[in-house]
Length: 302
Image 1 (cartoon, rainbow, N blue to C red):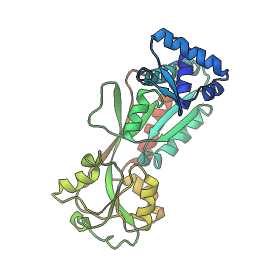
Image 2 (image 1 turned 180 degrees about the vertical axis):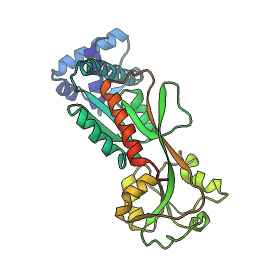
Image 3 (image 1 turned 30 degrees about the horizontal axis):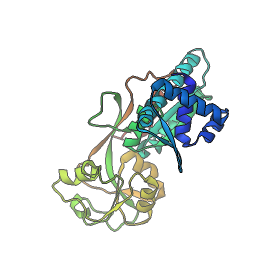
Image 4 (image 1 turned 180 degrees about the horizontal axis):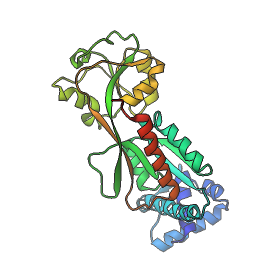
């Protein structure tokens, strides 16, 4: 396999079109077709078939795609690492994150990073845990700053970033704003930000189960949509769970923390990356900036 083989295959797979792949690569469509046929010949396997919807990957193509993406990403990082060591502070850093980081420490980390490496292309993306793991594996992401995972496959590694606390958030003037016990909130309507498959392990299950209380029955579901959550918690009587730094950050929008006396679950955030992927100097510097910004912006007051 050659570099151009992988580039043509990945471009065609992403676009589901040989014509679009040719435009991306700056070559003719017959050239892309010929290159992919060379790859199929080298692997002795059919990778793509034409359909009414465009290009469809075969089972062999689907098996090759994440590995081809990973190889291309690793090659790009190799070139960038050499250039950055030489003082050519360019390249790319791709980061996946969640609202608790994105709205608190991330802006400060980006500012720190920009001061040192203004020419490096930053790609920032809000991701769910499954998306983060998949994109780390195929090389789309260099790192993910997300909540700590209790079990992690051996091809990935996580470094603790910070531990903070969950709080219960509601709008200013909420009818239950003076409640101090968790059982007083069981009958309220809550917003749930995880999918059904993650609900058994959610903070809500932990929070109520730890104190021997039933999970609220009135649940409004908005998986992976913090914008929906923020709008509803700030403007309706729906209640939600935020990390403390995040609740403090959005307080000007009319959100307050309920003065609950019971201990609420903690929230551990880690940096996750691929174990076999050596970070470029730019990635290492971004991690350092994120660690500094997290300590400065997310430290829980004593």
